[in-house]
Length: 161
Image (cartoon, rainbow, N blue to C red; front, side, top):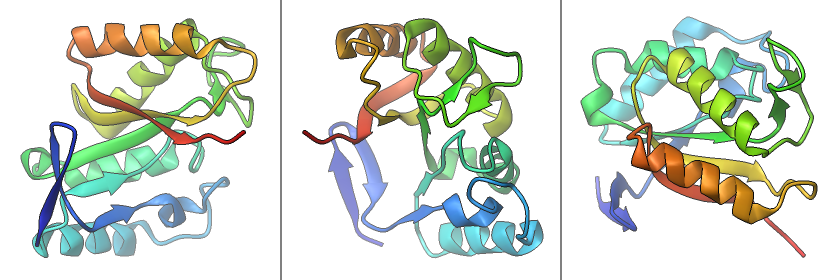
């Protein structure tokens, strides 16, 4: 499998998006065993980038990916997204609410780390721009997570005029 550098992150040119493996936004209607076999097969074929998000499921997709990569963490670059679940308004989070405030970014990463079963995320990126939070505030929170070693690389998934 050929690789490419995304900044300092070395990943396979082909990645695996896991969104459809957990009923997208419902967490129902999929076969976890088949999804885990699919992830294992992709890893066996040399895929090193697995993409997920806390909103997928919600939360179920990160848990699924975490189970699939257990014991193989050193062979995979985990990418996950935040910002479409508000954790500051409730303990379990409120899906579908754009929230990239620093407190929410921190709450979101802690949940993602727990669900993925890892102590760091290779690529952590904002799912969509939050029009109510200055991007500088969001990036400042992300920079703190990088400095703490919880996140290795940051990015933005969707942005438009």
